[in-house]
Image 1 (tube, rainbow, N blue to C red):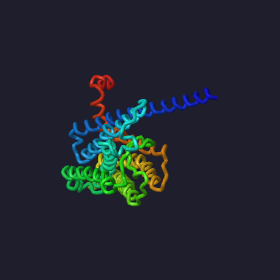
Image 2 (cartoon, rainbow, N blue to C red; image 1 turned 90 degrees about the vertical axis):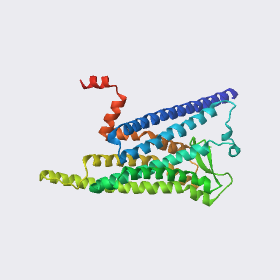
Image 3 (cartoon, rainbow, N blue to C red; image 1 turned 60 degrees about the vertical axis):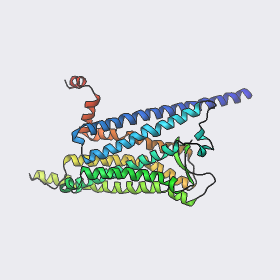
Image 4 (cartoon, rainbow, N blue to C red; image 1 turned 45 degrees about the vertical axis):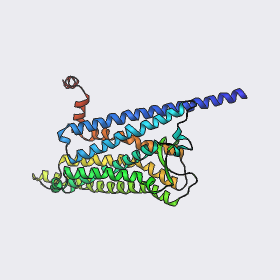
Length: 335
């Protein structure tokens, strides 16, 4: 019986070790995908004059936020998980007395992830507004959407997002940042033994703010796509009548609006599990396994943007191919 028990414990240990190794491999691959994809996006946008537009600036801001997740947030989770695998070694910031340590890494990593997520949501909202003006009011596009105004809104989105990210720990002593063994990330949490209604209400501000912006973004996208459909019908009639209208959006504006719609759909799908998890926590559910999938689905979204741009935007795809594929290989494939 003793031998069978030892064999069972060994099998459990091996399975746990294999799961941890696979998890770390997944995290490392995600880091590489985020860094590669968003580096390509920034190189294409900043290195191509065609993309030096308000829309291009917003996409660059979105890529920087995603890069920060790949540089700071995910690598820290890799470091934490590798640390837990080292025998007889427990990082000081993971113990029960971690709040008394000189520097708690989660005090930086947690707000960084939250701030970058809020920047992404805000930027997608601004992209939607920019595209809706181009589609609904094409004659006013150049006068309303300028580089200077766009740059100001980008700065405000970063400042506002990171202020909102640190506000829970600034305005409530009951809220702390800690490394969660379930989600494998730095999360906001209520101090043990505390049951502050105010603290829970503050934590609910995140999903409330995010879903308000996402809801507005979805509504604006629906209006823009409906307008695009009407313009398509109008163009068809004008083509049959051999006439032209100056009050219709260009083909590139229509294409860009559909791209932003796809971007909004992808981000909404990736963020929804987090909102469900936060609300579940407030009502008393822990959902350990679900928290892991929720947070990492959101983190995975940081490498999707370049894929969406490559599929939806031919000019972006061609420029990316020029950067990634050597000229002699392109010439040989063309011949």
